[in-house]
Length: 502
Image 1 (cartoon, rainbow, N blue to C red):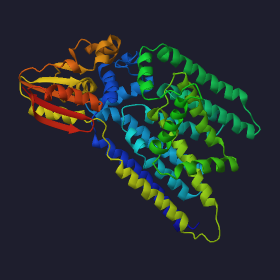
Image 2: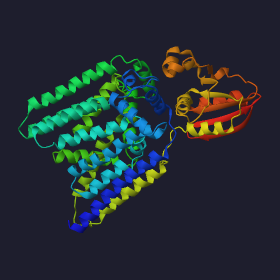
Image 3: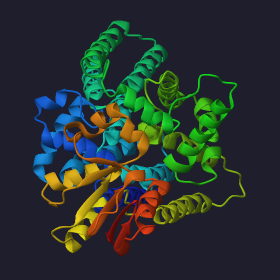
Image 4: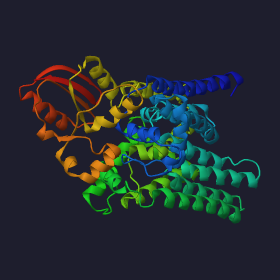
C-alpha cells in the first residue's frame, strides 16, 4: 500500500470516529426530556449525600456504587440539569470509541475492515442513545472493551501486566453490574494466552483472580445480597421476558431465544439482513485463523448471563446486554475480513471499497430512519404546556408514570406544578408494598384509581407519561363520557397533557 492510499484510509477512519462522536454530542445537547427510569435514579442522586448513596436506593433502583459516586460529582458540574447527569455516560462513550478503534486496529490489518467495524459501532442507534442515558450501560461497554484490550495488549513487564489487570478489574466491579461475567472471560483468555506461550504464570494469575474475587464478594455482600428491591426487580423484568425459561423443551424457551436473536440482530446491531450471515462467517474465520479469543470473550459472558437469568439473578434484555454489542460487531467484521480475503482474479480492486461504502450508506439510511436525535418520554414539554396555560385554581391529575419526571423538574426548579392526585390502576392501588417502594417519601400522596376518577367542577389537567395505550384511553374515557369538555391538549413522544372543563 502506497503512502497516499494509507493517508486516505486513515482519513476515512478518523472521519468515521469524529462523526460518531459528533452524533453523540448532538444527542447529548439535544437534551431530551428525562424519563421514568432516569428520573428515578437522578432523584436518588439529587436528594442523597455521597455517603447516602451507599444505602439501598429508593424508587426500586439499583446501580453500581462507583457509578453513583461519580454521577453525584458530575451533577455539580452542570447543576439542576439533565446534562449534568448525562455527562459521565457521554465521556465513557468517547473512551469506548477510542478503545474500540485500538482493538479493531489490532485485530484487522485491512483499513476497510476497521472502517466497517467503526460504522457498525458508531452508526448504531442503541449505542448513540445510551451514550447520554442516566444509567451505567455505557460504563459496561467501556470496561468490557478495556478489559479485552488489556488482555490482548498487556503493558511492558509481568508486574505491570498483572497490576493493570488487578486494578482495572477491581474498578470494573464497583462501576458495573456485569463485571463478573467479563472478568471470568478475561481470566480464561489470559490463561489460554499464557498456555500458548508455554508460560502459565499461575501464581500471578491466581493473585489477580483473588483480588477480583475478594473485591466482588465485598461488593456483593455489602450492596447486593438481600437487596430490598430484589422482589420488585424480578417482577418488573419478568414482564419483559428477561429471564430464560429453565425447560429447554418448552415453547417459552424457544420463544425466548427467538426474541433474543431479534434483539441482537435487529436492535443491538443495525437491522441489515446480511449481518447474521457475516457473524457466522466471522466465527468460522476466527476459528480457522486461530483467533478464537474474541469468540470466547463474547460467548463466555453471554453464557454466564443466560444461566443467571434462568435463576432470576440477573435479567437478559437489551440494555443489560449492551456490553456484548461491540464484541459482536468485531465478530461480524471478521466475517467481512473473511470475504475480503477471498480474491478471485476476476474481482476488480474497486469491489471492496464499494462494499464498505454500501455498508456505510445502508447504516446511514437506517440511522436516519430511526428518528435521530432520539426522544423517549417527552414529559418536560407537556409540563411546560401546562405551566403556560394553567390558571390558579386548576386541578392537576398526574398519571403514576409521569410523577417521577415531574418531581425531578420540580426539584431542579423547572416547574412549580403540584399534583392534586396521582392516578394509578387498580392493581397498583391495592399493592401497598409496591406503593411504598415506588413513591418512597411520597407514599402518602393522594392516590385515585382510574375507574374511580371523579368529575369535579372547574378545570382539570391530566399529565400522562410512561403509559400503555389502554390506560390512557380509560382515563380520557372517564372525562369524555361525562360533562367535561376537552379544551386543550398537547402530545409528544409517550407523553401527553389534557385540559378538561366541567
